[in-house]
Amino acid sequence: MITIKINNKNYEAGEGETVLPVLIREGIDIPHLCYHDALSPYGSCRLCMVEVTAGGKKGITASCTLPVSEGLEIETETPEVVQIRKVLLEMYLAEAPGSKKIQELAKKFGVVHSRFADFDIEAKGDRCVLCGLCVRACNELLGIGAINYAGRGTNSSINTPWYESSSACIGCGACAYVCPADAIDIIDRGDERIMETWNRTTLKLKECVESKQYFATEKAVEYVYGKDSDLPEDLKDLSADSRRRKKAADFVLKPRRK
Image 1 (cartoon, rainbow, N blue to C red):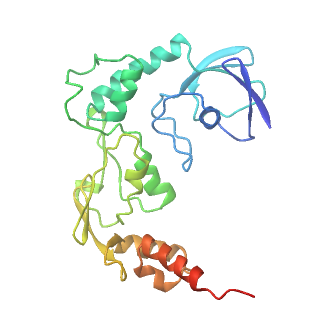
Image 2 (image 1 turned 180 degrees about the vertical axis):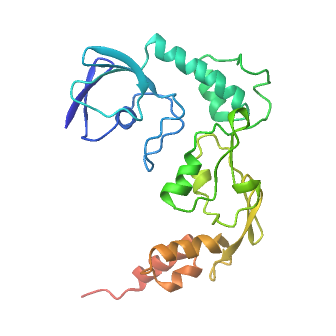
Image 3 (image 1 turned 90 degrees about the vertical axis):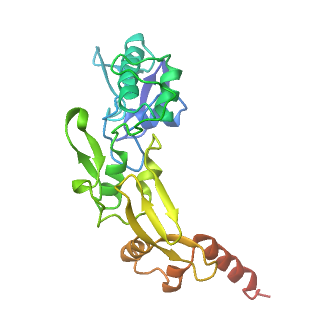
């Protein structure tokens, strides 16, 4: 184990860890948008900036990409770090005024106005903060690549290729699950799942043979079985609730040993 100092207290960190997971694990409050423990560190949102002292030198850097090392000293709330976060939150308010997450963070740091744009914070607006978590989940975790960055500068966005319905998307919802800004809309309507944010990409839903409820897209089910060929075939047509009931029934009805 490695010992690092955070806000003048010593903490243990694992070899190969970066600083942000240590901060999160130890309950040290620090804002972040682009970090998820299932994905590789990215360092795009910059909200997790900390002041670092190493080798007698000080600097400010993103904690999610900073490897731990013996004797590393971290300060999470210096005036310089807090000011950087405030400026960043002004920029995020201008980029995504409709994001409740950004509004909450801005309020927490006393940011009530953005010099980068004029808008009503209470009004609905664009919610995407371009953190890229959805892109990396789709690419790194699933290997599908249905979405990616598009455009440049102030016209940057995350979308499907050519801004058209995606033939690659499996409708799994991983993108919405990791999104910190609740910026991805998915609608289930009848036997269809509509990926509203991804140019209304529409996929067929699979119906559970027992409950008659739609539970996942046909593409997502096929994807899972393509990754694990040892899964029982009969589970393809059962929702999660029906599978649990089946397991419970099998357990209850299983003959007891004397």
